[in-house]
Length: 90
Image (cartoon, rainbow, N blue to C red; front, side, top):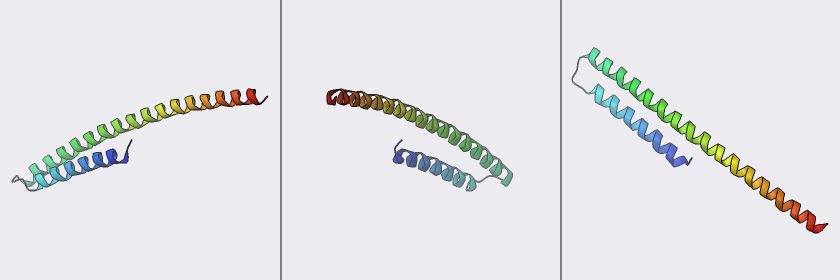
């Protein structure tokens, strides 16, 4: 995964968290209502972050699996070429 994609996701989640926190803190509600809203938003953001992190983890694992498969294919082709060269030299 490109670093810019990870940075974008981090920035997006950070901006959402900051915006939610500021919105709740400046809301004209009583303290207990504001705290409840803040806790709910924090829990929602945590769940959203966990979901995005799981998606990112799945993407990275899939990419690693693809890379391992491609590397095995390249290794096999190199081995085949090596055998052909050795046969020609013999």
